[in-house]
Amino acid sequence: GCGNGIAGDFDIDLDLFQGTGINFQQRSFHLHVPDNYDPNVKTKIILMLHGGLGDWTSMAFQSDILNYSDDFGYLVAFGRGYQAGIGRTWNAGGCCGRSRNDNIDDMLYLDTLIEYMDENYCIDEKNIFSSGFSNGSMMQFRLVCERDYINSVGIVDGGFQNADVSSCLTDCNPPNDIQAECYSDSLAFGCDDPHQLLDTYFSCDNQPMDVPIIVFWGLLDANAPYNGGAGSASLDSHVDPPVEVSVDYFVEKYNCNLNPIVSFSNTSNNDVAICNSYIGCSADITVCTAQNNAHNWPGGNTLPIGDQTTTENIIATVHLLDFFEENIFVEAPVVTVTTNPVPTSSSNTVPTSSSNSVPTSSSNSVPTSSSNQIPSNNPSPSTPTTNTQPTSTFNTQPGISAQPNPSFNNEPNSSTRTSLPNEGSESEDTTINDDNNVYDDNQEESSSNVLYNSAIYIIFLVIYIIY
Image (cartoon, rainbow, N blue to C red):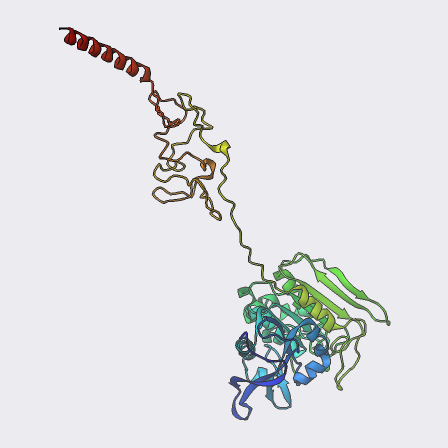
């Protein structure tokens, strides 16, 4: 999609129709493209998923994301849930509304949205981030477990959903005040390990556990209680697991150190906002809680419904974007390595002195092993070629022309060298070249014979002349 797209705000219809009967509908989303968008530069993107019964406008208002995202250079795609009845919802498994009841494939919707962006805008496929509120936050767990194109996620007031776990938890008493202990006790009512149920439903074991997660939660939340259960203010019949159970699931999967460190703390305004970050993980996990925060975006704008208590001690959007920035994937630069030329130092050259024998020291002899021997018909070039990688001794194969072994990279030219000595021994008929004069062990004897034969010839010639 690079080379395409312009700045602005757009409502975009996707080539995807879902639902049945009067609820059969074309899915859509809202896109914000910053003014500094360059269609030839890969750009980060954030998916923002609204809460149940909301729309993209409520998500933009609550999070105030557009007052920050342009400075960070993000495209922002606001998802729009399945419209049926009184509002839009997402099928996160155990929640919520008609999207769950009609078994809408909202994961296919998100896939289609990303495909559209990839075809029509220059997005950075390695830096696709996602966040959501309440029902839209529940979808983040599905993205972590079921998709591999997400870089990092932000979760605000919406937990792991699983229909099997929810049905088990309804056996707890009272159902609207389920604590973590009751969640564990629910195993006595025939529930399996909730972690195994999550694995089965979300197929988390089939995904690499490497998606960074940041969580924000208000301790006054009555829609999605921090300690789990059926929220007293929730309009949907579902049960949330305790936040600690959802977090512990990923802490275990990511092999984190079980003792988190405090990465942020603000105790002003008679409030406590604190972030705990787990270390030693396969991916970052941070959990931020705010004491005086109900079912609202921490530090954001409140919707005109429900408990509007909102903390001022932490601005979730700022921490969210900082977290995403810390986990930006940066392509490693392509490094071109230039190999140094084959050295021509005389320290490696076989001596060519006028002495009558080749030194027999094994340190200077050329080994005759087939793995290291230099073929006599493949001489080393007198002038090495730059940028040529020397061939190592164990990579050179017989019959293949290769750069000479670097340990013997200055052997004399084979046209001068007439023979190679055996390693560690001295040959009696060894021949070497010295200024084009040939010497051997019988040279003096040959000269004497020539003189003797010449003298005899002269004597016979004189006698012939006299007589």
